[in-house]
Image 1 (tube, rainbow, N blue to C red):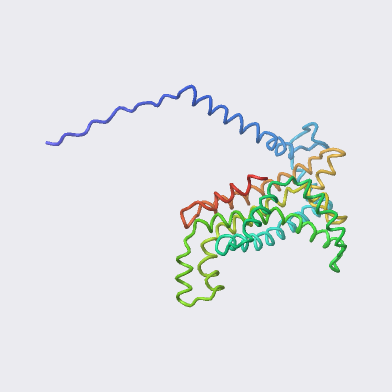
Image 2: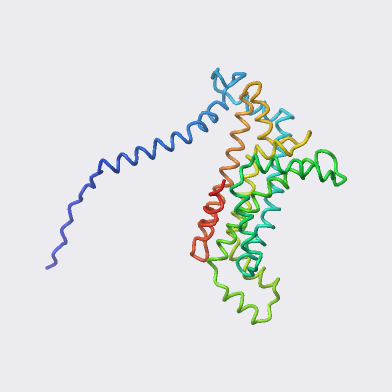
Length: 295
């Protein structure tokens, strides 16, 4: 004879007033942060001439934005700048992070201080210092005006982005054991082979997330870009800032919504990459947090 176990009564978890208040406060905080973005997204479907009034729902603003040469040129400049910034910052930041972790010398504390200063220095200070520096160089690299402006934007945006990538890669390298690299060296693997076969696969999530973050940070850099850009290479944030002097049109809101979606996709990919931590140390997320403190 078998005795069937009696089902335990399900107890309802009582919600304490303090927890309910904290949850409500968190929801209000999220609404406060994201409500302006929601307003821009909603008004991007406005058929009116300005965003002051909502005259009807439609997609004319998106069609107008995509057919406006000034807007498409600004978007093109921003995307090219963001891509170039991601490449430059990833190369510099990856090698700097590896060097700071594996071969630190007398120069390491000074470099960390400089990178920290880059993160905490106000953008307006960086912009004011970059403008006379570019003027003093007086070099056009034999390129047309558009390409000169593009190069200046990439260099300016790469300063902050390189520091971000360096701290992310450094955090990942700190959580890695050097035994695998030493074992490869014992098997007569060259330094380049050790880096490509051992080190790079292990730090790949940090490198890729750093590149995506550098791309994203470059898209919304308004202060520095407004100082170093030249005629013919106006990026999208500077174009929006100049358009605000007249009126904010729905086509600007429409293109801003499209750029927002692109930014969210990049950040989502970066978050997924950071979650895939083969070392189990979470170094990529820690590096991301420490790198963004100064922003």
